[in-house]
Amino acid sequence: MKKIFFLSFLFSCYFSATAQVMTPEKLWALERVSAVGLTNDAEKVIFRTRSYSIDENSGSSKTFVIPVKGGEPEMVRNIDSIYSDGKVSPSGTWRILPKEVEVEPVKGVDFYPELKKSEVYIYDDLNYRHWDKWEDGHYSHLFLKDLSTGEEIDIMEGEPHDTPLQPFGGPEDYIWNNDGTKVYYVSKKVKGKEYAVSTNTDIYAYDLATGTTSNLTEDNQGYDTQPAFSKDGVLAWLQMDEPGYEADKNDIIILRDGKQINLTENWDGTVSSFKWGNDGKTIYFLAPVLGTKQLYVLNTSKKGVSSIKQLTEGQFDITGLVGQTGNIMVVSRTDMNQAAELYTVNLQNGNLTQLTQINDDFYNNIELSRVEKRMIPTTDGKEMLTWIIYPPDFDPNKKYPTLLYLQGGPQSPLSQFYSFRWNFQLMAANGYIVVAPNRRGMPGYGVEWNEQISGDWGGQNIQDYLSAIDAVSEEPFVDKERIGAVGASYGGYSVFYLAGMHNNRFKSFIAHDGIFNTRSMYGTTEELFFVNKDLGGPYWEKPTPRAYTDFNPINFVDKWNTPIMIVQGGIDFRVPVGQGLEAFQAAQLRGIKSKLLYFPMENHWILSPQNAIVWQKEFFKWLEETLK
Image (cartoon, rainbow, N blue to C red; front, side, top):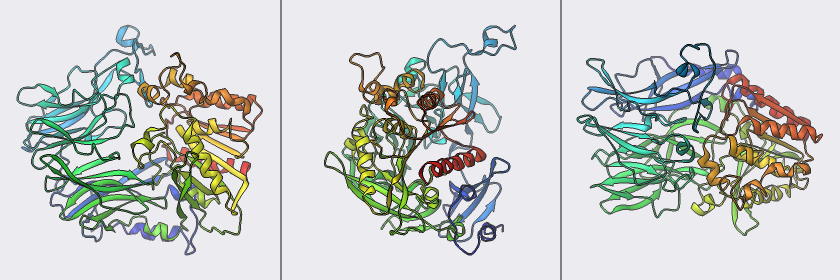
C-alpha cells in the first residue's frame, strides 16, 4: 500500500527543526487538497492533492482514499470501481458528457472560406468576449453517450448556449433524476445583448423518452443553479430572484407536488452551497456568518421548513460539503493560517475532527500568525467585525508597518479563507500587521448589510475602511508613518478611490485589476448586469449615476500624492486592461512614484506558478521601498 507520508519526510528535510516564517516559495510548496467524494460503500473519502513545480511552471495531481473514521491514506490510480460520479444513468445505459461544438460563424474564414489565413472575428451583437476568452462560435453542450453502442446524442443541438455555465460552471450544472428518465441541467438560454445584461439562468429537464426539453424555472428571472434530488425524488436548487443582481440573497427552493417552496425565505442570510441528507428530509448547507463560513441544517416538512440551525461555530471556514455517512458529514476546512484539509463533522453536536493531515508537518515548521477578531464602531453607529493578523514574532512593544486589506467582490465574504495570492499569513510573515475589515457589502451580517454597497461604491463602505484603519492605528504598536492599502478588483477600485481622498493616512498603495475609470469600465466589461446593478446603469443616463461623478476615481487624480503599484492582467475582460493602463499613465504624468506589473497572459487572477512568485516578490519589494 502506497502511503503519502513521504511528504512528511520531504518537509522535514526541507525545513529545519527551528520554525521559520512563510515565504512565496514555501507557500507554493504546500499541497492543495480537494475532495472528490465518498466511495460507493461510504466508508472512505476520495481526495486529490495538487503540487506545483516552480521550475516547470506547472502542477500535477495525485489521488488518494482515506477511511472516514481516520487512518492512513492510500494512493489510487483508478477510482472507477469504487466511485460513482453520478453522471452515469441509474440503469447504467447512458453517460452525460459535456463537449464543445461549433454553432455559429464568427471567424473570417467562416464567412470567406477562400481567405483561410485571415485573422478576424466578426460580431454584430454583444457578449463577444467573456472572462478571459473571445467568443469563437463554440458552445459547451451536453451529450448522452450510449455505453453499449458508443452513440452520442446532443441534447442541446443547434443551441447557442452553454452547459456547464461559463466560465466557472462544472458537474454541479447537470444531473440525472432518480429513475434515470430525465437529465436536469442549468443553462442561460439568452444571447447577445440580453446575455450580457441578464443573470437569468434556468433549470431545464430533458426527457429521454420524448427528446423534449422543459424549463422548470421560467418564472424566475434571476439565477437558478445547483439542482439536486433527495433520495425520495424531491428536487432542490439555489435561487436568486432579482434579475441582473449577481450577489442577491441565495435561497434554497424545493419542488414538491408541482409547487415551488422557498425554504430560506424568512432567514436573513445567503446560501453558498447545499447537500441533501441521507434521510431525504434534511438539507445541509454552507453560508457566510460573522467573518466565517459555517455548516447549517434545515429539516423540511410538507409545509416547507421547520427549523434552521447552525451546526458548526469557530474561527474557520467550512468550504465544501463532501458527503454524509451515518451521523458524520465530511467537509473541507480552512483558516487564515491553514490551507484546505478534510474534516469530519459530528452532525449531532457540530464537533470537527481533522481527517487529512497533508500539510501538518509543513505548518509544524512554520511560525503561525495570531488572528484576532475585533469589533470596530462605524460612522453610522454600527459595529463592524475586523480581522487583525499579527506577525508571527509580534512584540507589542515594537512598532510595525500596517496594511489595510481591501476586499474585492464587492459582495464577497472576508472570511477565514486561505488564498495562495492574497495570503495574510505571508503578509504577516514579512513583518506587517494586516487589518481586514468586513465592511458594508459583505454577506454574513444580513441582507441589508450585504446590499448597501450597490450604487454606493465610494460611500459608507469607504468610511468603514477608514474607521477600521483609524481605530487600529491608535494602537502603540502601529507605526502611523508606515501604513499602506492593498486590494484587487473592487479592492483595486478602493485603492484608486482612496488615493484621491485619504488625507495622507497611507504611504503606499497596491491595486490589482482595479476599476479606475467607471465610464470606460462600463464601456468595456463583458458582464453588463454587474455594472448595471452596482454602478447604477450606463453613464449616459440622466441624472448621471454617482458612480460616474462622485465615486469615479479618475475624477480625483489631481489629489493623488502617494506611491502606487498597479497590477493588470492582459486577458482580464471583467476589469479590462485599459483600467490599469489608464491609472499607471495618470500616476506617471502626475510625477508620482509608480510601477506597473503587466501580466499579458493572466486574467483577473494570477494562475501560473512563476507569475505568482513574481507577483509576490514585487508586492513585498514595493512595500519594502515605500513603507520600510
